[in-house]
Image (cartoon, rainbow, N blue to C red):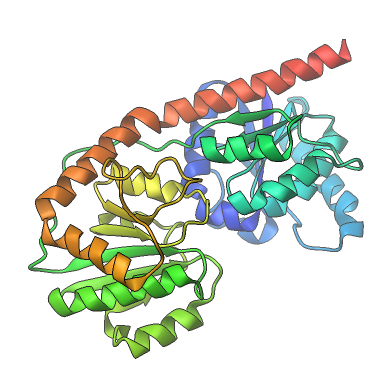
Length: 364
């Protein structure tokens, strides 16, 4: 089987670890993957290491989409040589859906669309009713709650829930020492949102008790100006660093003590699962669209985007390193059992087989 995995530039950079793990697993099962990323991403670490990598032009007017999709098809054909055509197209990242659908139509291959965010549901449902390009044969959702919501938006669509997977814990990790440096990674979706403001306020409060506290922010929408201004007002500048590549180059950040997720946005991040597997303590806003966040089992959940609520959650965590260590160990066990790479690969393989069989049946 030949699969074309098409990622938009955001997903290709943020989730390169996820894509690499998936492609390794698919290769082990005999699937040859062509990994398509925007041309600007070629040569970077965002491309697959266990696939044939090609570039495509992701920017341009809608009127040029057919031409750009045809160029990608020609490039994929050259990469495959005489090995045959594409059997399935799998799109990651909303910005890749339109060109992926056009590519799938031209290739005569079934289209699978990954729906990884709650705010993509309406666009995904609209794509399911598209007429010009290929409509998705299946939607894959990495969280059951997103899958249920997708079925509600598109009742006639084929929707499967296939949770993302990471490697399980590799060993025990000692409890953090609040008497030395305490490092906190903060994954923010909206720099000007209430979640970022509440997290900053809570960290400023914690810094008065823990002088060694350091915070590393990643801001999804790039609005770091608001974060800098609030950090200056709270006298946090010397303790704060903003790292736009936190998810792309995640190994250093996985050595941190805490991971804060202050936005209940329904956005899925494999970094969260990696953090749990690495023994980090996750403190997150309660998010009904993210089933991996289980209060007291995988994370400490915060109800309400207020500085006071976040102050209390961080205070309780830092005040009892032993309890925090137990929570981190529980999260690691859960990830190893419920979010393994092998389960993710198996789920994707089943999806590929299902849409390929459906295409064969339709052609018969």
